[in-house]
Structure formats: structure tokens, C-alpha cells
Image (cartoon, rainbow, N blue to C red; front, side, top):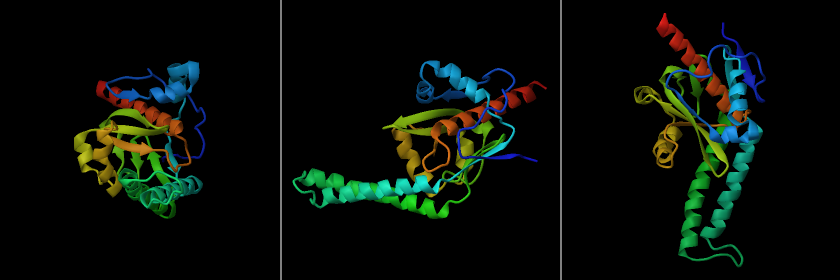
Length: 232
């Protein structure tokens, strides 16, 4: 029977994984997270990843308070863009270009706010599930993505926001039932450098470093199991 862990804080050390820290051809890139550990850098990062218990199934739930903060920020930015679009800022910038930027902002931040509201009221319970067999984010797809189909895990960072990018085997990705948002943003994300299925910690009860370290540890553990099986 699987054991479940509900993450609401960074995972504590359980036991060190046996075997080498990395085998095979998987690519793991997260210079931003390594940098956040200061002078310890990669050494401390790899040690903490190796201390994560990968025998249980981890569930990361939505944080209503964090999502409320996202919605509030979206409302504020939408209102600011409306002021620009309709030249309502006293003594502010005016002109066609400013109005155009404001109009685009209304659409973009309005959509973000709508998505945030939908998730605030509809998403309950586990949002991201990480198991020895694979990973699932219901904001991306309803199915689990098996670790054997994950060719790489990387961090894409923009304006302080970090996103975990999974490079999934095209055949497996094509068989997934992606959510509408995942479909709409897939091409745009790829164009700006996030080429893969994107998982964010925004609105979750775990921070990004916890999310990335947990996924990385489980992917490596799965890879080691596959190598051991292939040698039998």
C-alpha cells in the first residue's frame, strides 16, 4: 500500500538514497535554485535532494490564501491597465501607444484573474501528486506523466518567477489530455524558452524549491530502478 505525504512545508530529511547521485541520460538543470543556497551551491543542493524519501506518494495541495493573493494582484493590475487604456490617470501618460498597452494589459491580467478565481473556487485537495511512478499536475493534465517519459527537468526563470519545465517524450505528451490552459500556453512558453510542460508552485502549499527538489529526487530514484531492472 502506498504511503501519502501531504506537503505544506519543505520536506524534512528522511533517509539518504542509496547509489550514485545520478545515472543515465536525464538532464537536471536548476542553477537558480543552486544559487539560492549561497556558497554551498550544488553540493548542498544535491545532498538535500538525496535526503528525500522517495518511497511515499507526495501530495501538494492548493493554498487558498496564496490564490487569493494572486487574484488580488490580478485585479490591481487589471484596474491599473484600465486607467491607462482610458486615459484616467491624472497627469499620467497618454497617447495611442499607452492606450494600446493598457488594452492588452486588461485582456492579459483579466484572463489571469479569471483563471485565479476559477482555481480558487474549483481546485480543492491535491493539485500536484509526485509518486515513484510519475508526476501529475491537474492544472496541466489529468493523467500521470511517467518518469520514464521525462527526458529532462529544468527551471525557467523570468522576473523572479520560477517554473519547472518537464521535457516529456513527444509520443507520451501527445497522448496526454492537456487542460485548455496548458494547450493555449504550450506554444507561447516554448517561444520564450520554456520548452516543455510547465509546473509552477504559484498558489500551492509548497514553495518552488520544495517542488523542484521533490520531483528531482523521485525522477532520479525512478531512473536508478530502471537501470537496475535493465541489468537483471
